Length: 122
Image 1 (cartoon, rainbow, N blue to C red):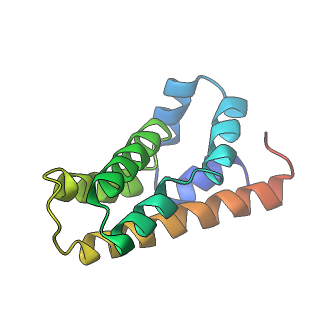
Image 2: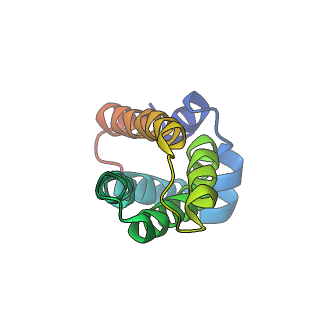
């Protein structure tokens, strides 16, 4: 699967990310690096311990990375939880987290599939 096919599978705008990052090698490099990003894990861990400030920072970081890589659905769900956490009040964000987790898993799965089918991309 090519990078473009992977973005198409996710329903993402490949041309948008290509415009931003300028070439497919760079897109592949940063998509593969996303597999190592700890923002999602940090978000989940922080929420499980009630550390709202860390959860907010992790959600905000995840949102920014997804925006840069044009992972639109994950950007949207991480933006929603970021806004819920912005007040730094301890409230139930489990519905938001479920949506982020679903979108995150979809992105990770697509990146892994692209990586497996294309060999080393970065």
